Image 1: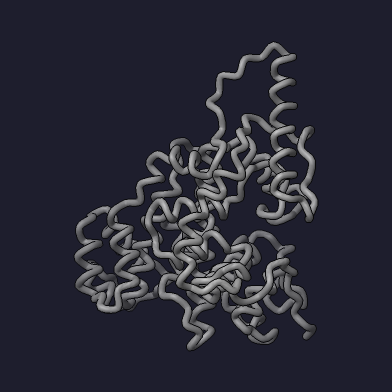
Image 2 (image 1 turned 30 degrees about the vertical axis):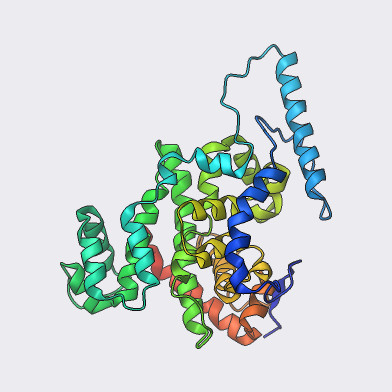
Length: 377
């Protein structure tokens, strides 16, 4: 069996050098910095006017390039006698979050479940009380708990029974699975189909994140790793909703080039989905570990508050991309010599090549079993 190769990353492994206690201040300033430096109003971007960014492109160069693309598109529209009637695209991350509408308001039950996760004194009674206050949520959790994924010896009919048979953590994760699915629903069949695919990837990342964290004992990985992996791409939801045209151009380009979305999004969008996701997480007042994991899931070497949890989310995202679509026969198998995963995340977690192959195999099996959950949503 050959040596497992990992995907290169420009970020260095480990912590960014910034003490954890300074992270809150740095993160709180994050959307302001993005807004001030990326105030780029783009209304329409076409593939004929876009130029791929170079690896060394500076922020100022990127801003000038996108502005030129906007001007070219506006000029073409004017010369054709067209009249622009569409609402201007959001120019900053802060403006994008402000337009989030229903997505900007995280359901109260979700907030309660998330904060219960970080409470060392949390009990089964606590989660039963929170979930039980929402009858629709309770019904959907019980449906999932009785699925073939868990293989319970008999059907259960209450959240209390679910906690007894599955455990506190599993029921909490089920609550997050159901409520996150509601966030990804679209207002039309076309939107729902696209968002369902995104949600399925997010669920796969959550399942892989939970598995990877369990495979690395005594690593100090946060209990919130499932939620972090589940929400890591939430920024794409806002882009899909409010930057639809450039977002889909980036998405289609990534598919045509068979390249990761985050490697091509700068060609069409003035900010990244990770930046948008982190800003939305802060708007929701989520814990710093979640904000950081969402914001740096493609750059785990920049994580300061909890580098290992962020690295797990990065690796979980890679595994979900590799093994989430079982119809793709060309995808590498867990025993292949080349597993294109983020080498910084592997270094932060100190995973050896043999262990990485075992984790990959376990993730592939987990996602195959996890399809039973996704099919019930």
